[in-house]
Length: 386
Length: 177
Image 1 (cartoon, rainbow over the protein chains, first blue to last red):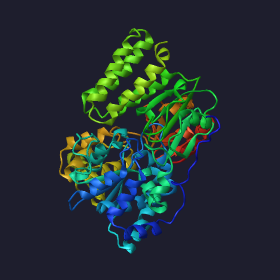
Image 2: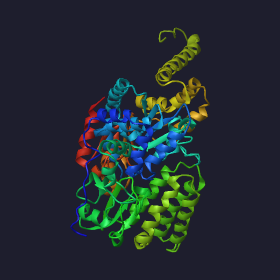
Image 3: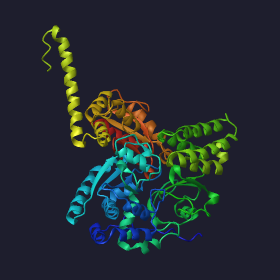
Image 4: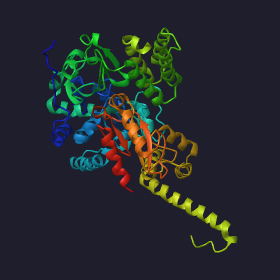
């Protein structure tokens, strides 16, 4: 186990000429493009992991004069910062991915929803967008991309909340179904993809589906950009092949004293040292939108959990009761246990509450609070109590 | 308009004129933004964001005027504005400092950075300096975990901060108008 190095990949940040690829795309039929993406096995890189090719296929089958392609650049998950780097270094590849998606799905209008925290990127993005629009015109492809900004709401990374926000409303998630490919932005068929996913579609069309498929495992094809932070001497952004174990990851990025890795940010899972070997980073094990946080033995997991719950209590949109009240109660609950106002058994009640939130919450935020809560409480119970 | 108040009897008119002049400036300033972004509901967030860029907060009067020009209820504008943490609806300083409080920044010394800023600006978290130049707030993850601790001053990020580095940064802003 020890000597297998974690496989580095360079697809996302590789400098390429988008024009060449898009010329090839324009000569292909939407079906051919979609088939290539399906064959590659690419799953959404924002965290949820829906097969990208299928999403495009559903969307292409919708009959509507108005269709939208949306790039989700509302990267708000604690510990994720790779989309910022992608948009900073290779924005033209993101636009190219949107153009490919528009060709495949028939959308003529695109939106990039960039989180407000990344406003400093706007001038350079606008400049590159202008160049891109000129290129589209030259090549005779009808696509206009608008840039929209968020204003500090984590929930707007949820796709339907993001649509509401573009429409000028409070970013409150909608009921599903209908799913976006049927009724999304302005209640029209909408294809929404993460920044990184869009760039991978470009690279798949450049190098072929097989090249991408050869990387990773059966359930997690390809590579992924990881945002690595916390107690590590090598914090930063790395593109790695999927399917490594947490142990291999820690071997490469740990500081020698790693006691836990939080995979997938505040809404992800905490993997304790004793499970490093058996846990695979990927859709068959712990899925991640890229956030990897390492904690060494000097850290209190109570503080980590408290920080996450405080985050969720603030960022819950407040629309549905399980999430709004649940987040607050989990936070107050662990505080009460820590202070000794409640017995340690109360933690079991809180775990049940987290389970209820998973079933009863309207969107992914409330549904995933329990991931971090359960995995931290179950593995570090004594740190929460004492 | 300022040389109108020749006699006390004209005082009421003068006040009315001043209010009207103020309203006109507001109408014009919002009008410009409506012209730029359009008058559909979709334009609401970009308009509110522009107001923030211009003067750091959105006043009640702004919201009423935006509502009037977009032909929607002021309550809708208020409801939307108050949903977003970056759309402040109370007076803020020209430079809004947001200290990231999420886990990586907390682990790497966020509290020390916050204390340093409080000491330099002589304000507490949530407050604005008397000259309305700085406001000090906290923010959830701003996406610089690998270079923690990080802060935003308006839209500009500052990363890998230490007390001395943040002092240097603030001195630059204090020198600015």
